[in-house]
Image 1: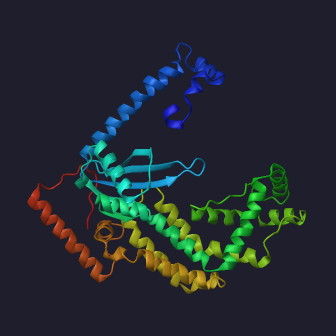
Image 2: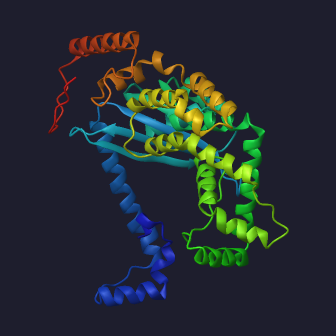
Image 3: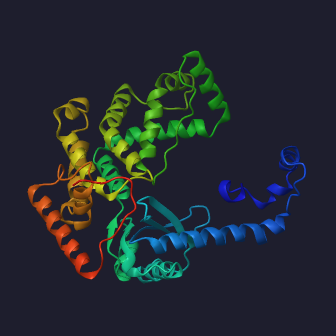
Length: 382
């Protein structure tokens, strides 16, 4: 429980936990807090460390995701380093190799030094790192470049910038979000308001859900906030009618919020898909292609008549931020080799470029070493 659920060491001193173990395992002698912290947990760490290190050593190549951020509560900075690889049985595996405090200035040189140090600590040769995924922050971009890793920008982070920038082009959209946020903040900071809202929900036979507070670093949290506001529109309107200090959304603003939800639904779905642990780089080109086609549909324009500028901005941002996908061999090859997509989302030139790159890599590998044998209970036919 301490390792898996992040429970404190002091749990072994809690009366309730002791009584539970007395009932479940009467003869078990509970170790002390000191013994757990100085012996048991370090032993668990060492076993897991050695197992992950062994698994990585068996991998042909490793991809890395890394991020650096600052905690808002105490201004402490942290650097994460997560490795992703395929086992000899063709199973996708990953491990968080580091999540450590980052001291000093966030310069590209310092970030590069830390990235190289973490890789060295886990005996990962730099040539074994196939790709390092990072956000669009200038310091991280420079750090990866200084460390000389082949890299790509985080798909989800880039998609977030697309949506955020598109929302900025229509002031009325920002006004709707700001008004909705003030309503949510009111309820989330008042237990009396929450109790009253719950009573209204019961009276109107609405789902008894709390309102969702969004956060600046996740665009989809704003989407979920708006979605929940629309669900509770009747309850909120009834509450606001009885409280003069609150300003409700107008009929036009409620309508605009609903149009925003309709417009951004595919973006939310793709964000959710790519946030899963099973998402692969091969999905990037198909996802962007699908979003562009969606924005070009007449049906999309008909469902969001008041968001013409936002639709145009979404399309322009997609073109700008993802224009290099078709020129990047990593994306082309991954998409072409994925049996779900093959060349369906690639143009003629992109397909030919992918084929040529695959043949070049095949010839290089054939000259340098024996074909790679993969233990796998299925075959992919290209």
